[in-house]
Length: 139
Image 1: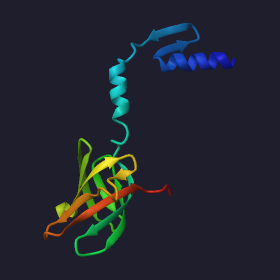
Image 2 (image 1 turned 90 degrees about the horizontal axis):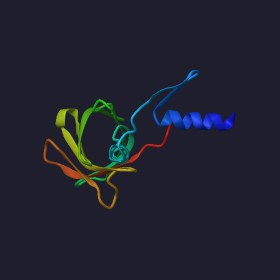
Image 3 (image 1 turned 60 degrees about the vertical axis):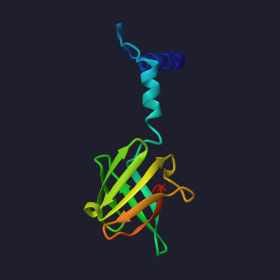
Image 4 (image 1 turned 135 degrees about the horizontal axis):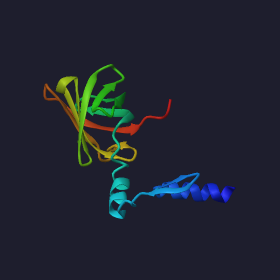
């Protein structure tokens, strides 16, 4: 029985539909190039999630806050500020409070940028700085 289940699972994964009467339909296999492209776009391209942000404004110290980016391109931070995000290639731009501050960074597997190569941040009064974020731990 175990081998039949394994064979059935393999056939289903290949797009073959099985009923009690036998094989009903066999779907055409997707082209290998399309499958490879889909896999390559999954990580680190996945943006929605929760992150721990570290930001350093010029003339100030480091600040840490939480940030959640949603699949609908909205965002919130641990201060309750609303934001929106966009992604072009690996570059993500996050605008907080209708553009009062803007964070620009590069998405990677661990979050955005890193301490050695941080992203940039600026605000509407001319302040600038650097930032990076790591994926927030679960819970």
